[in-house]
Amino acid sequence: MLILENAVIIGEGMERVCYLHPEDQDKVVKIPKEGAGGNKQNQCEFKTYNYLTKHHGQLDCISRCYGFSETDLGPGLICQCVRNYTGEISRTLLETLINPSKESPRDLKGIVANFCNHIVKHNIQLFDLNPLNIVLRHDQPGEYKAVSIDLKGRYANKEFIPFSTFIPYLSRKKIRRRENRLLDRMDFIRNNSEQFR
Image (cartoon, rainbow, N blue to C red; front, side, top):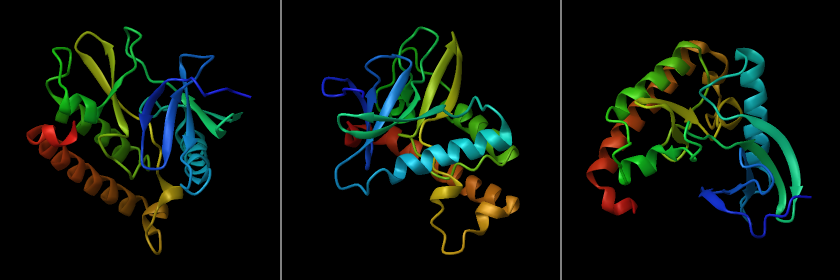
């Protein structure tokens, strides 16, 4: 059993808390928050990861999932801790927008657009594109890659009849809508960064 009582929290969403793995610095442990519907989000993410790797092979644009482990805080999903070439944990798109540094990429929109073009081209169904779920991995000086760290896709499709899950044309259109929403959101965050600090 993993003991997370004194583990470092490196991220937090609406339903889960992300801890740095206490025994492996290249992994994180995602734990459901109390009252957040149990382990459903973790199960959905692991199922999505398995589907994507089965149909597309090992993808460089998503963080890896390794399975489940019991912890002192309940069942946790073990995932890759995305790190820069320097060894630092890659910052989320949101963090980069509200606290830019001299190392931050200048063409954030271009990096995100390349990521979206890639997932559209290959019909990689990632429908929850938001600045907290994407990190910017710094691969070498001047080179960045967007990586999704929260895999909400076909198994989290909230359409009444999920046509976009099964029809590639509709899936790609949906991803494009999410991309446009994300790019607009990036402008809003950049222009109103004080609201997000």
